[in-house]
Length: 298
Image (tube, rainbow, N blue to C red; front, top):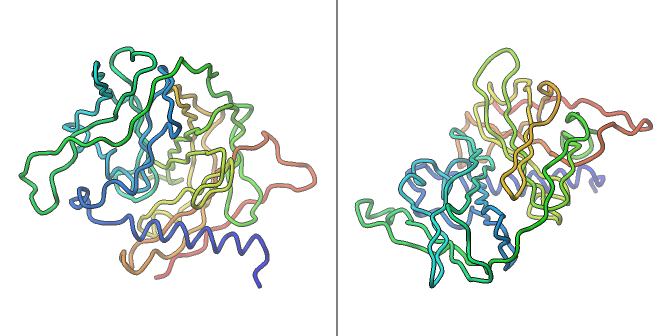
């Protein structure tokens, strides 16, 4: 029987790699693979009139947050008596991988209060009829509510490497009373190379691979790239679209890597790390340890 930390690791890896295996069609197949890999917030029935709508992808810059798709999607909040086009305010996703990504949208004009709005956009044409007209679809609806009182994210210190238990962990000492909270992460290889865009969405309860106040971050890439030590920089983004960069320089970090599922290719690996909201300083009795990478399969 595996000890608890390793049992959790096995469960996390199984869930994360299953998501990656399912969420890895070629980019041209977006239309037949769209909906299931997008989470839309707010998930409550009410939409505070100052809150932005988030589309959270488990499939990188694919699906409804694909920049090419959004250019012609015409997203809008539509009611029986009003229409408010949506403008993109934030987008953070990886063009080359299949990790998590997020896009935030704000209405282009004030919303009416106590009115039911539908989130509509022009979907991609069917995969087997790429020249067909784009159908207008409704993704979900809300009833507007008074503006939410929400403070901007506040960093209590710089991110730090956490204790190595189940997964290599980064602790982010950020205050934000309301969830979800998006953490935008730029991962740049130390010694040179292109930065990759990672996203961690912190929820108030456990969801899929994540514990409360933690999120597993994953990214697919060539083993020679993702096994390199990384410099991580963090920005906290709340539901009002307020973005605050973490203090300090880039955090040196080496993530766990695993061979990717066979349905991908032999020359890909999966980068995994966990991001958790926590204290600015590590507990004195349990000093933080720096993880080392596991090599991917050749």
